[in-house]
Length: 151
Image (cartoon, rainbow, N blue to C red; front, side, top):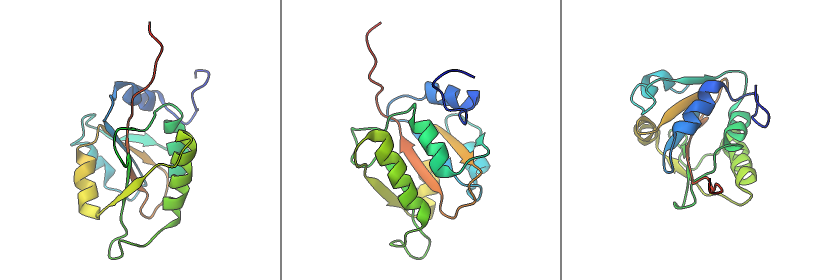
Protein backbone atom coordinates (compact mmCIF):
# COMPACT_ATOMS: atom_id res chain seq x y z
CA UNK A 1 0.00 0.00 0.00
CA UNK A 2 0.98 3.60 -0.57
CA UNK A 3 -0.22 6.79 1.06
CA UNK A 4 -2.83 8.81 -0.77
CA UNK A 5 -3.96 6.01 -3.09
CA UNK A 6 -7.42 4.57 -2.51
CA UNK A 7 -7.08 0.98 -1.30
CA UNK A 8 -9.61 -0.16 -3.90
CA UNK A 9 -7.04 0.64 -6.60
CA UNK A 10 -4.93 -2.43 -7.18
CA UNK A 11 -1.38 -2.22 -8.48
CA UNK A 12 -2.68 -3.31 -11.89
CA UNK A 13 -5.25 -0.51 -12.00
CA UNK A 14 -2.66 2.10 -11.01
CA UNK A 15 -0.29 0.64 -13.64
CA UNK A 16 -2.97 0.90 -16.35
CA UNK A 17 -3.81 4.48 -15.33
CA UNK A 18 -0.11 5.39 -15.51
CA UNK A 19 0.20 3.87 -18.99
CA UNK A 20 -2.80 5.81 -20.31
CA UNK A 21 -2.26 9.11 -22.07
CA UNK A 22 -4.46 12.13 -22.70
CA UNK A 23 -7.47 11.14 -24.77
CA UNK A 24 -7.30 7.43 -23.91
CA UNK A 25 -10.56 5.86 -22.78
CA UNK A 26 -11.19 3.65 -19.78
CA UNK A 27 -14.32 1.52 -19.48
CA UNK A 28 -15.72 0.84 -16.02
CA UNK A 29 -18.52 -1.69 -16.03
CA UNK A 30 -20.78 -4.02 -14.10
CA UNK A 31 -20.59 -7.82 -13.99
CA UNK A 32 -23.13 -8.27 -16.81
CA UNK A 33 -21.03 -6.45 -19.41
CA UNK A 34 -19.18 -8.81 -21.83
CA UNK A 35 -16.00 -7.34 -20.40
CA UNK A 36 -13.55 -10.20 -20.91
CA UNK A 37 -14.51 -10.59 -24.57
CA UNK A 38 -14.32 -6.88 -25.33
CA UNK A 39 -11.16 -6.36 -23.22
CA UNK A 40 -9.24 -8.66 -25.58
CA UNK A 41 -9.65 -5.99 -28.30
CA UNK A 42 -8.45 -3.07 -26.13
CA UNK A 43 -4.95 -1.60 -26.03
CA UNK A 44 -4.31 -3.23 -22.64
CA UNK A 45 -5.54 -6.53 -24.07
CA UNK A 46 -7.02 -8.14 -20.98
CA UNK A 47 -9.67 -7.50 -18.36
CA UNK A 48 -8.84 -5.78 -15.07
CA UNK A 49 -11.08 -6.77 -12.15
CA UNK A 50 -11.99 -4.36 -9.38
CA UNK A 51 -13.77 -6.76 -7.06
CA UNK A 52 -15.52 -5.63 -3.92
CA UNK A 53 -17.01 -2.34 -5.01
CA UNK A 54 -19.82 -0.90 -7.05
CA UNK A 55 -19.38 1.37 -10.06
CA UNK A 56 -19.74 4.75 -8.31
CA UNK A 57 -17.22 3.72 -5.62
CA UNK A 58 -14.79 2.35 -8.21
CA UNK A 59 -15.16 5.40 -10.42
CA UNK A 60 -14.55 7.75 -7.48
CA UNK A 61 -11.34 5.87 -6.67
CA UNK A 62 -10.17 6.01 -10.30
CA UNK A 63 -11.07 9.69 -10.63
CA UNK A 64 -9.09 10.48 -7.48
CA UNK A 65 -6.02 9.90 -9.68
CA UNK A 66 -7.26 10.46 -13.25
CA UNK A 67 -8.69 13.74 -14.52
CA UNK A 68 -11.35 13.79 -17.22
CA UNK A 69 -10.65 15.33 -20.61
CA UNK A 70 -11.55 19.02 -20.85
CA UNK A 71 -10.95 19.20 -24.62
CA UNK A 72 -14.13 17.32 -25.56
CA UNK A 73 -17.75 18.32 -24.86
CA UNK A 74 -18.65 15.05 -23.08
CA UNK A 75 -15.70 13.11 -21.60
CA UNK A 76 -18.02 10.43 -20.19
CA UNK A 77 -20.29 8.08 -22.13
CA UNK A 78 -22.87 5.63 -20.80
CA UNK A 79 -24.91 2.86 -22.32
CA UNK A 80 -28.53 3.63 -23.23
CA UNK A 81 -31.34 1.47 -21.89
CA UNK A 82 -32.25 -0.99 -24.65
CA UNK A 83 -35.66 -0.23 -26.13
CA UNK A 84 -36.03 3.05 -24.21
CA UNK A 85 -33.13 5.44 -24.91
CA UNK A 86 -34.65 8.17 -22.71
CA UNK A 87 -35.00 5.87 -19.67
CA UNK A 88 -32.88 6.50 -16.59
CA UNK A 89 -31.62 3.96 -14.10
CA UNK A 90 -30.21 4.91 -10.65
CA UNK A 91 -26.57 4.31 -11.59
CA UNK A 92 -26.74 7.10 -14.21
CA UNK A 93 -27.48 9.73 -11.56
CA UNK A 94 -25.05 8.19 -9.07
CA UNK A 95 -22.25 8.37 -11.65
CA UNK A 96 -23.17 11.95 -12.57
CA UNK A 97 -22.71 12.93 -8.92
CA UNK A 98 -19.35 11.12 -8.77
CA UNK A 99 -17.92 12.69 -11.93
CA UNK A 100 -19.16 16.17 -11.04
CA UNK A 101 -17.64 15.89 -7.55
CA UNK A 102 -14.34 14.54 -8.89
CA UNK A 103 -13.99 17.41 -11.36
CA UNK A 104 -15.49 20.10 -9.13
CA UNK A 105 -17.86 21.16 -11.92
CA UNK A 106 -20.79 19.82 -13.96
CA UNK A 107 -19.49 17.29 -16.52
CA UNK A 108 -21.45 16.34 -19.63
CA UNK A 109 -22.26 12.66 -20.13
CA UNK A 110 -23.44 11.32 -23.48
CA UNK A 111 -25.47 8.19 -24.16
CA UNK A 112 -24.56 5.47 -26.65
CA UNK A 113 -26.77 2.73 -28.04
CA UNK A 114 -25.77 -0.71 -26.71
CA UNK A 115 -23.85 -1.97 -29.75
CA UNK A 116 -22.27 1.45 -30.40
CA UNK A 117 -21.09 1.32 -26.77
CA UNK A 118 -19.54 -2.12 -27.34
CA UNK A 119 -17.68 -0.84 -30.42
CA UNK A 120 -16.42 2.21 -28.53
CA UNK A 121 -15.35 -0.03 -25.64
CA UNK A 122 -13.22 -2.12 -28.01
CA UNK A 123 -11.27 1.06 -28.87
CA UNK A 124 -10.66 1.85 -25.18
CA UNK A 125 -7.29 1.55 -23.49
CA UNK A 126 -8.64 -0.83 -20.85
CA UNK A 127 -11.75 -2.27 -19.22
CA UNK A 128 -12.20 -2.40 -15.48
CA UNK A 129 -14.99 -4.67 -14.22
CA UNK A 130 -16.47 -3.95 -10.79
CA UNK A 131 -18.64 -6.23 -8.66
CA UNK A 132 -21.68 -4.06 -9.44
CA UNK A 133 -24.68 -6.15 -10.49
CA UNK A 134 -26.07 -3.47 -12.80
CA UNK A 135 -28.14 -3.04 -14.89
CA UNK A 136 -26.66 -0.61 -17.40
CA UNK A 137 -23.58 0.05 -15.33
CA UNK A 138 -21.34 0.68 -18.32
CA UNK A 139 -19.35 3.92 -18.64
CA UNK A 140 -16.45 5.19 -20.71
CA UNK A 141 -14.18 7.78 -19.09
CA UNK A 142 -11.80 9.80 -21.29
CA UNK A 143 -8.53 10.70 -19.60
CA UNK A 144 -7.52 14.33 -19.51
CA UNK A 145 -4.21 16.11 -19.10
CA UNK A 146 -2.52 15.90 -15.72
CA UNK A 147 -1.12 19.32 -14.83
CA UNK A 148 2.30 18.63 -13.33
CA UNK A 149 5.03 20.99 -12.11
CA UNK A 150 8.24 21.03 -14.15
CA UNK A 151 10.97 18.58 -13.17
